[in-house]
Image (cartoon, rainbow, N blue to C red; front, side, top):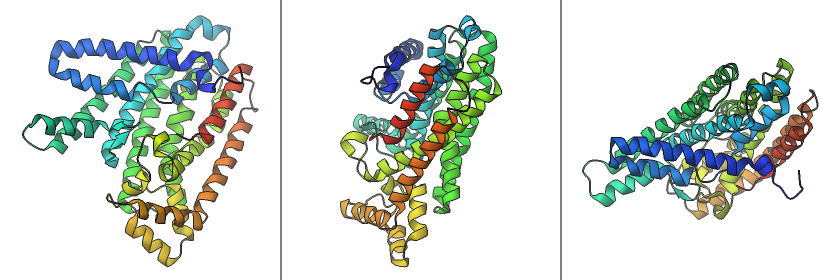
Length: 363
């Protein structure tokens, strides 16, 4: 791989995934249009959401397959069918993002209005009767459900051999259950007002780490018909890396540049997200600092001064530096696991590059 090529662009992955995504949206637009032209805005709203993104989950799925693939794997499934199966994860991700924004009350996603806010605005602009907010939430939930359905459809019609598709579907089903369980645990943690670092870590393991990295790798390994040792190595790599990825996301949610993250500065603070970093801050906070966190965190009207104050507490308590240290330790642990089993060399190179990219990113 050339030093200039980002690991996510190796094997032309991102443009290939984009082609599959556009093909699916076009096909589903025809089907929805046959029902009613009123459904066109629903489909159109996906264009912006699915036109970009990091494509991490398809990447880990594809390179998980490449790492474990042998001659039998290539005879059972074509590379193109694996790419299509991996692309199904983008629709599952879209479902998760749309529903997550509803649950968090987020206003934006990737620099655009969140789906529920988009439909809420449409309702107001058209002067329709009833609750604009309720309409927006309802439309977003249905849109997320459609994406979930299309993810299943794409996976099962991707062209994988029957045995490979069956193996992949088993892992995929586990992943969906874990994701929804993690989402509920996240809701529960917010409702309880946060807790220990261990509880916060459990949330990110199921809401993010397994779903973002470990399970996509396992799907790729399942398609390849890999041995148990490969699955174990992928878990040893994927779980700590997935946790590190989410910890970086938590830092960006508080300290990230809005022009790069696509979300307002300190948005996670306004939403009151009970992250590992917040739990760490509260463990070390003075009584006065803890009181300020309790007063400011989750205030939807939190202004720049309030954000600055919370950022200062997170830094002063050492929560930011501790989170950075955790990311470094988890990255090292993940990379060590890649040495425990024999994998295809190019895949190891790409997975190593992906690990660094996932933990050092700015968006």
